[in-house]
Image (tube, rainbow, N blue to C red; front, side, top):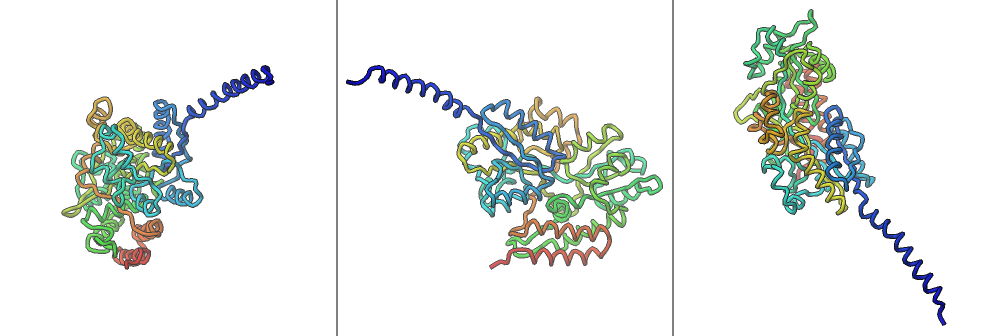
Length: 430
């Protein structure tokens, strides 16, 4: 005969065990998905990324964003993520320079975002135009979604421009005019510098800007040979050298340029629109700042689109859903509005500029922020060299540009050597 007390004890035990188990199951189901997010250039993005993460988590409490310590620049985050791929420690989401997508795609690291866009009915409400989306495409895949876009522009200290006889309302349209104005501003006795063209910007962006604006290209159409040694590239390199000789540009580092410009000791600086928010904050009304368009020196001239894209690396289905939600928030109208007000980048969505509660009034009240938007008609892709030596090529080009700026060798001779050195690092066709 079976013991009824034992049956009752067993039943009670099972019920108790189930009661104890249920909260654990509920807790597991309600525990937030934690995403690791990597980015770079903390001087521009640290406060912004933290703000976007907080706002996203407030709207999506089921997701926790864990920001990695930012890397210094696009090259550093690229190197870090390439190591991460080997050690299986990639972040779930990463923000990479437009020109670094190709290197990652060649290693099959990013997840194609097109299926997520196609399956999400909200995508059509985000304002991602085909032309802007194309900047995040490699080999037919949507490798990334544009987060911040920029173009090269010129920053002018309007007070120094006036004192040198220039007109802040009619800024130079050619490099020759820029050099002439810079020479007029230059005054060693008063510790004034006329011009600095930041040729050091990540990914050879400045060199590409000079070549593209003279009608040239980095490589031949079939990518078999370097093409920046042709006539447009020669004109670009000579223009850089004339900045030194005619515009009295010193051989200094960008950190010195920023200090001098913010202090009112420099008249003209070529930089990315990405830095506009920083210029405004650091100058603080010390003198009027005016921004001007980048000189275009040939028919069919173009300017490289700078900035970065949000990319998904995680292969886990649950994390992919959360990652897509974060990407579309950061790159969509709300995140883009936060980004523009904190920096000087353009958004990769068309919606904020059309809405008064987002950026319409902001742009109307801040004409310097409109310069980059006015240059959208001439933007082209930020070129990425093919092959395993892409990062090394960046350093090689920078080294040669330094030689021109320091006047250690003639511009034409440096360019010829640079072409040969880059060609040797490219993959062999066939």
